[in-house]
Image (cartoon, rainbow, N blue to C red; front, side):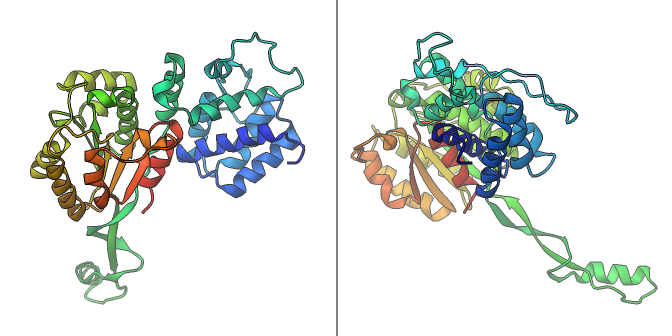
Length: 367
């Protein structure tokens, strides 16, 4: 591992983080093994780099398609094959280098530098504010968002299921005994089922949130695609609009087109207090994790917003507020809406970059 330059180590560990966000269990130990394998096979060889990661970071056959998709997206234009018999024919390109504003020609990098280090541009892109990106950079971020796995915290259901351990299932035990002529030969047991905890996303689409609203909706699309039955999405502004049906399209662009058509108050004002009151009156929040994505510019009554946030905190399992400006240095929550909401939040997180969205997805997957 000491033979790999530090910049390349940072690139490869960033790739491992991307895999974890996509649902591949690329933990610390597997990442160390991948770095050792990459040092042995050579990071300048795309075949060696591909197989070094595939053989060490994947834990089951289900991880292989995710690994291939992430490898293709992270290292820019690679097309890894599915065959295990021979390494795929692929060429590492420098497509991602243009995303960092590099205007140099194909030979602008040090000829001795491994080509795999070009992916460090993707790692830097993870932490950049989406409002400051070019169209090409934003498209790359959207492609990475589409790979998010969106795993959820599991909760205990009221329903029971057969289990090896648990409480005695008297009915099944008696039925089994009747089939055996009245002799109880085996005690049957049952335990509560485990289900993904419901997640509700309320996304501010007002004018002040317009630089981030599209990316937030794409994050919501990834969450809906991962857990369609356990995710609800609403836009908030001057009206509350349910977007879950539109975001169930598998294709992200089709989903965004349908959502944009459904939102009647895009880039309008913000009345979070009134919209939250309407949501609590007509939709279920009890036991769910509620995510509110807004900058807190409340044009309505801030006291009403505070009262509704207090009610929401009593009903929901967890309340997370995502503010794009929190990721900026020196930010302070001074708006009336943020001051009213802060006492009732379980988490107050940033929402300005791909890294922030990956962190948010991780929070939804753990208690």
